[in-house]
Amino acid sequence: MARFILDRVFSIALTLAAVVTLTFFMMHTVPGGPFAQDKEVPPEVLRALEAKYHLDEPLYLQYVNYVKGLLVWDLGPSFQKIGVSVNDIIKQSMPASAKLGAVAFVFVLLVGIPAGIYSAVRRDSLPDQAIRFVATLGQTIPSFVLATLLIYVFSSKLKIFPTFGLRTWKHFVLPSIALGGYSLSFVTRLVRSSMLEALGQDYIMTARAKGVPEFQVFFKHALRNSLIPVVTYIGPLIATVVTGSFVVEKVFAIPGMGKFFVDSITNRDYTVLMGLTILDAILLCAAVLIVDLLYGLIDPRIRVGK
Amino acid sequence: MSAVTEAAAPLLDVKGLNVSFFTHVGEVRAIRGVDFHVNARETVGIVGESGSGKSVTSLAILRLLPYPGRVTSGGVTFRGEDLLQKSAGAMRALRGDEISMVFQDPMTSLNPVFTIGEQIVEALAVHKKKKGAREARAKAIEMLNLVGIPDAASRFGAYPHEFSGGMRQRAMIAMALVCEPSLLIADEPTTALDVTIQAQILEVMKDLREKTGASVILITHDLAVVSETCSRIIVMYGGQVMEEAPTRELFENPLHPYTRGLMRCIPAQGGAARERLVPIPGTPPDLLKPPAGCPFVERCGEAMRICLASRPVFYGEGRHRAACWRLDPEAPR
Image 1 (cartoon, chains in turn brown, orange):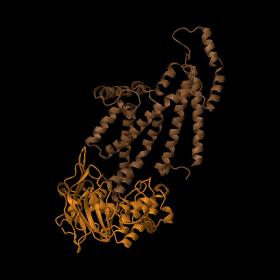
Image 2 (cartoon, each protein chain N blue to C red):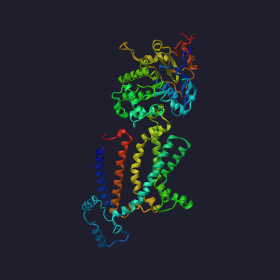
Image 3 (cartoon, chains in turn yellow, purple):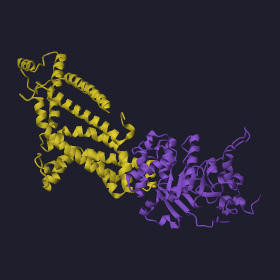
Image 4 (spheres, helix red, strand yellow):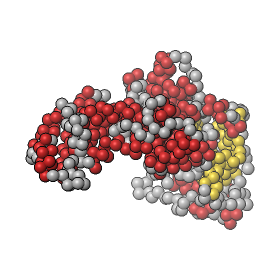
């Protein structure tokens, strides 16, 4: 088991090295730079700026220096916000994104999994058809439309929930739905289809033939066998939702990380772009590692190093 | 026509059973008027080719027909009680306790995520047969021993994927018999196994039947399997019973052309080395449009005009009966 984790940590390190290298060089091949503006910047000013941020050095040297910093988790200064480091940006913006993401994630699981199970167990019933309809709708509506609709109905018309910020629990409701809406729909459909597949297996007939009550057939025999695809999806999902969403954070005016992702690309804010990409990659790799460990817990056939 | 009569009331009595599957292309009449009975401590074989309704009959008895299958008429009486009238809860309590079932494919019939032991103990637990976990475990290990799993105590915690096919089928039998049912339905229990393992599994079933006194319905398409294990054989075709007789009688004097056809398909022991097996030409009838007459008429070499027009009644004497117009005294010889 320890051996397995060690192996995986090693391969994660390789993955991250590849992410860092590829992102770094790809980023620099894109035309423009952090100080390119609409107005012509005087050449001497540009040179001075580039010298200050070491952008005048050869690319390989910049890369080596960046990696050196990275090894002690120093992500460098932002090129756009004077005197603010990338570490500061993450420290300030991540909590809001992570809190909202965690709430949205729990919301997706608590609603999506039971809805999917119910839909599978009562296959073709009216509630199943309703759940399928809403889930399909949820997958087709983009989050900015959903967010705007939610604000219009629940904030503007019904005045139940506030429109922006993250101060009380009420503030979390609408952005969580907007952020998790797509995943909720996806998880519901995934749980439904994999439950249905499990329910069609021979061992379900065996369980029924030995007199196992239906409740136990569903929740013991079928559910555990249907969890693999669900876990596969929701592992990476958590990494995605805690790093924030540009759209949802924009609509609900939440001071999260989402907007830095997008802004850093348009502004060629190299260090911010690198830092956030690496953070995302680390979270994703960690999530995948946890998923791999969960596989073993769920299904003895993929248990490692027994 | 003579009815099969027994002194005591049979353990299981199936009367005029009709089962249909209501699919989107129409009603598939899988079982059309099946009658048979099983006495206490008796092993009955049901033989027929794929689609003859053997498995559907057994699932109908347990009321486990998959959607969209339904019993449309008929009765299933077990120990004097009509199973088709029982509540879902009472039926559930009966399954695995009074009537249990062993399925065809041991590779897929055990739940892959639970240990063999857990799955056997579960059968005891749902029927509240054992008080404590330790007692249940001991009973499960005893059953694993009984079906011939070596070193049963240490295999208790093994997962199905750590067992071979034959071992899994032994575990399935242990699970089916752990509550000491009075009827065991074995649906093609050896079909998915190697021939050498087949014989072992049949031996285990025979052995346990004698020990527990359970009645057995052995469903198979293999006449050789029933000839060794069953005291009585029911031959099914196209959702109907074609012939029924004590095993010896059936092999010595098969009355129905279909039964004779089946026997020409198995190599005779000690027969001439160059003897050819004779297949039955054609395919079974389409039960979406069931034939008005004998279901076998299309493939029968001895068909008469009446065979097309109306369904044959049963002829025969004593415990041997067959549904064929050829057996009518007025039929040409």
